[in-house]
Length: 280
Image 1 (cartoon, rainbow, N blue to C red):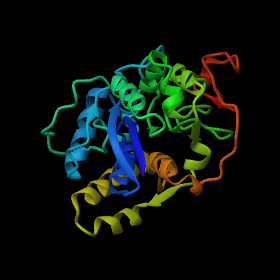
Image 2: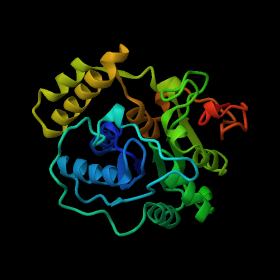
Image 3: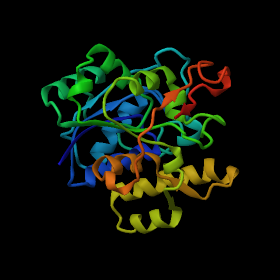
């Protein structure tokens, strides 16, 4: 059993990762923590609550997190995921509210309370994770591991020619997390770009008529129509679902040890255009 805190910025692929976690008997989802990324944290928090209600899993706490990066200006990706982050799929207003605790406090409290038991799976910008390990460095020794969707190793980025979105959105947080001295698995674009699902596969899933699979299909259809078609993209990259799958089944991937760093506007390349570049 994997006890997981999912740190997320829903996000279409974030939503698919969340649904995968909910459907996986190997996972006990301890909490969802939200962060600004694909859209503002107010929207990502509402989406997390609404997605849980759609799936009938209202017992999982949702904690609102950081509303801006540590240093840089805010960057969002609503042009990829729609204004609500969910491909303009309108879900009912959630009946629950997020927990009164900040996401950073939830992360710290749960890891300290269960040494060696909690796996952190950040699939958005790493702001919450960086703040947590800075505030309470002991979590680096108490966490089971940190499985991150982020970075682009030896491949082009997806937001600039150099950088993947999660690292680009808060490169200073990524730098802190990569240097925190805890066990990390990095699931980056060089792997996730090869993990595709076709539109037709989502249609097959949605044929069962379940609200979750219907929502999945509608989100992916939006992405492929509005973002994919103008760019010649015909399949949906399963970035965040692959990261979640790797957290519970690391044998799915081949892992290589590496020293990884992130560009902080000129520290590695003398070019601010490569901010968020992931280098190993």
